[in-house]
Length: 186
Image (cartoon, one colour):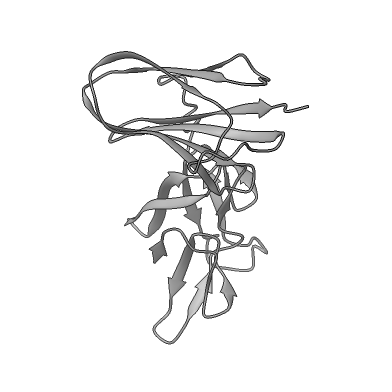
């Protein structure tokens, strides 16, 4: 089993997770996906014959699954059921690590605020609707507590961006969250 940040292996669509049978790669259903900036399987573990995956995705096997799912094969016999991914409980919804974006929509500047439970590395970045990295607002050590930054609607080179949907992402070693922001330039 392999999980990561890839769409295909040797031309076969995998969507972040695939299986090696000794001679070639095969997909596991429709893999993982979602409206996040770039779906990624960060962890894949087999326990008692069941594959568990975790990462940055909101869909697994075409079903809603918040960052955690397992691959379930049907029991042996003519059940007619196909193997598929199954969401694991409620998953994670990010409410433990809220990111606030205001005003939204915005014209010239938007604020992003978040609260860190512990001091540590923190990266605050802006992604376009396609998942492309647009700008990095912060990337380094931050203290425990509440933090506020602003984004002026420009890319990392200082160029004004067009109207559209952008995602402000806050990642630490133990927490991650994102929030949509709408830029209106007209």
